[in-house]
Structures are given as C-alpha cells and as structure tokens.
Image 1: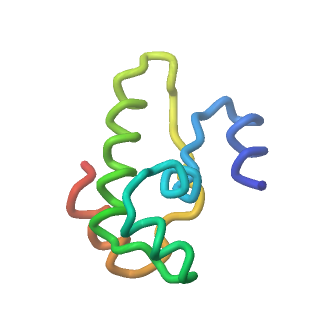
Image 2: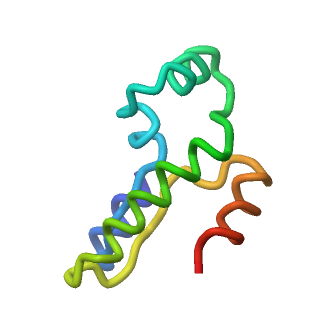
Image 3: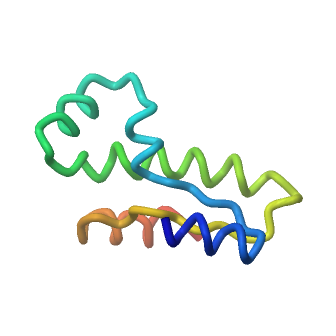
Length: 84
C-alpha cells in the first residue's frame, strides 16, 4: 500500500487498523467485518490507542503512520478526544 511505502521511505512506524481488527478474537469485531460493516468506533479506537501507546514507548520510533483510519466521523472525533 501507499502507507507502507511512505513508512519505509520515511523510516516511520506503520499501524494498519485493518490488520489490528482482523487479528482480534473479539466475536463482535469478527461478525461486523464478516457483514461488511464498520466496526464500532469505541472498539477500533481501543485497539488503536493500545498499539499507539506501545509504539510511543519505543525510542526507535520517530513517527507513526496510521493506515485505514478514521473510517467514520465518530472515529475521528474519538481520536481527537483521546490522543494528545
């Protein structure tokens, strides 16, 4: 993807929200994805926030590109509220 290329070219970490969602064992997430719907913003934001906090603690990470987020306005608003 373009995000992966940019991350590599700029030496940034990349977080692919779709990969985070597909990797979870949460049945609600799996059912939502199978139905082709957007996963609830609270769930997506929780997974993303955890991943970003983990990367923020890594001194080798100089920046982060987020791929596939936000997918809806509620996700964008939650991000603005929860992330400094």
